[in-house]
Length: 421
Image (tube, rainbow, N blue to C red; front, side):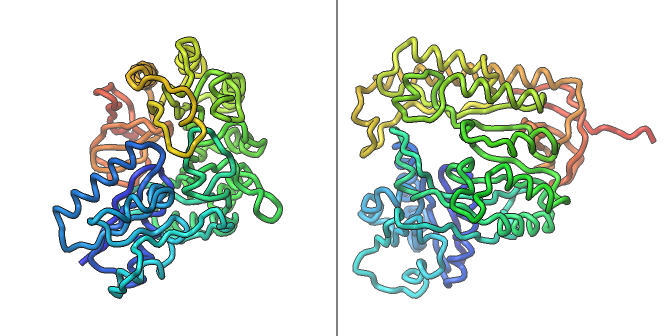
């Protein structure tokens, strides 16, 4: 008997799946599948439901527990599924007692056990000693969001913004580094909003500086998606001064058109993004940028889309996460004049092509150089800029110099750098 997790969505969900698995085991849960859902798009919700039905067909005797953002925002949709045994809200999925009905076979009047997440004011730090099958670990530093972008349902799935105290974050990363992890990724829903709810109101930049100072044995630190308008001076200083902070930043961009950004209720404008990437490149020339972009947002016309398409090259964006706009019931954008889905999908295709073109250019520029590569398996590693490298002859977890001898599809091809001796 065992507990398995099936995770949809963001890196924070990946982290939380490890933590909730430990809590379910602590509660005494045996033969169960915990589905940690995502609510960002309607497609993510559809995929979760499809996976639940498949899991029930393949293992009819296994208990199925559903949690995550989709379970929080629309718990009844999962509670009404015959395949589901228990629905737990985001606020309670990291508490062992939430799994008691499954562990002890308790009969509930309602299998939906979801509370009001908007009343939650703290984020506990759950210590994870390892991440199954991974050479890098994710560490949660923040949860929730206080912003109300017109397209987004996530604040209602995650609750208000709240931060994990710096000391607890540093303690967990020390433990992970001591257990052999060579890279840690800081995760959260809106990590650049870190700190105002803590004593002294530390910023994300201050947190990063503290980690780098107090965990000298950690070779690599990454940060996940950030809101560039919230970047503080300490973050710029950390990027400029410590090579262990990886030169790969992912922007919550969403659009390159000012009017669409205003209708999204974003807090940055096009010029802010361009100024941010220019400022970072000035202090860290080897940095690469990715971005989340929504194609076909309500009212987006061809000129507005062209502004978004052009910013891919103007800002030098390499890794694009592109989503055709998906209306989420209950959000303001769902009530705006909609763009035809076929048009949104075509715009998404053009954006993806632009991102792929820039990625191939990045790979071509790497050929002939030497990269520092974190080995993930016996045949795959990642550069500091998160480019995949095919290589052989190294153990997972090593960081090795690799000469790039060519490209193969979306990957670099490397060979070991031999010492002169």
